[in-house]
Image 1 (cartoon, rainbow over the protein chains, first blue to last red):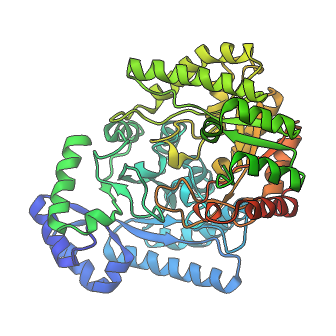
Image 2 (cartoon, one colour):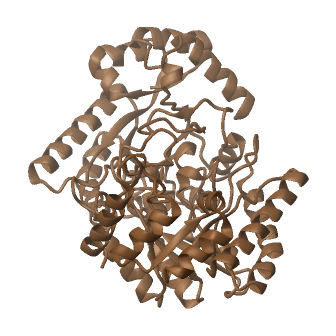
Image 3 (cartoon, rainbow over the protein chains, first blue to last red):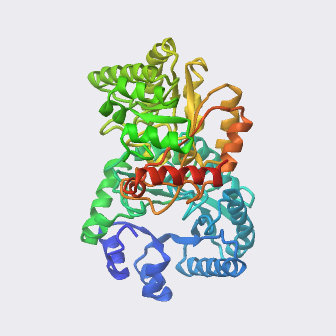
Length: 265
Length: 265
């Protein structure tokens, strides 16, 4: 998604050219290019699919919406398996229309995980609960902190449900470093993503994630926490940014690699 | 600020007409109308000034900026005393330009409170540290949770430094109810403010606070927490909202009173 302006073949070629050996994919572009085609493309290029984004949106109270969400998440799990990745990132969902019940919404996520986690495990896919920044709590994700994500994940076996640690969402939280350690002790860190925090936030706040090094987040500090917690998996850079999307995608990817080296490596 | 389109005489008249017996003031309109004039106006109308907003912005590293901030906060304390309110709300400040050091910024707030709290206490004014929503952590307030605000406040006597509980900033936080109880046990709840959480957030996210009842916050639930913690002070409604500001101020104030009765009383 960092370079969603690139088609799948261009993305894979750009990764290869730049020495990027893994890529996190989103479902929409995978669907647009075709699942089997995409799986073959990345496999033939020797690229690892580090994760698939995203399942989730598991907070509906309407029974039909709930069944549809579970079905869609099963499909996402199947897609992850077909792409050869072992991580499906979950954005859990916001409050249903008119609801003010955060606690109930969080409990419905747990119910859904109970249905989905064994299905995923059978396909060698682990669900990664991602806390989203509290500014998304009402409309996108009622799981707002790493503490809450771990409280959810720890109801299930570690090999079935982990968490996604994304600097953009947790950088402000002084409890997050200790929660990363907790996640590490439990073998729960399923994914680690970087994005920087820049202001002013754009309208709707979704597409304002900053390029590495442009903002308030000390990338090496957070990488240090995650590595001290025993994480040895891939590090993804996930930027949603209208300004970056308007630029040449290969140039943005090259810049992202440079910024990673400068600020995180 | 909820009806900043009203001049001070119109505001005081509207409060009187609607049976609103207290008003929280902001420094800028007080300055614009004159401190002594405003103090006389509210006093003559029998209105209580429930709080003055805002002091703070105490995170500068530059020595000159730091001295200027302390001086400005002393002036704010003097103004609070002149207006007859016992509460000065503090928005603590964000990261200095180029800084990524949240911990250091939080520590500088504590240093500043140590200078300001005795000065305020001598004037019968209590400093109210307000946690702001984490979306303001970089540019406005590095104190993002009630937990952090209390960690700061509790370094000082309760009669000198309390906290401001604002639903808009803490509604997403499942630890906030317990922190309100903690604040109550320590006699630290200096102010209680209501605003609702609505989306999409506007560009810059500052002026999108929802009218009571329009959003995701259960006002009675939060009022219940605060009252269970022993708080018996005024309840303020503080909305920053471009749409509300564009309307007739008296109409907005009347609507706010109705919404308060419907959703919070």
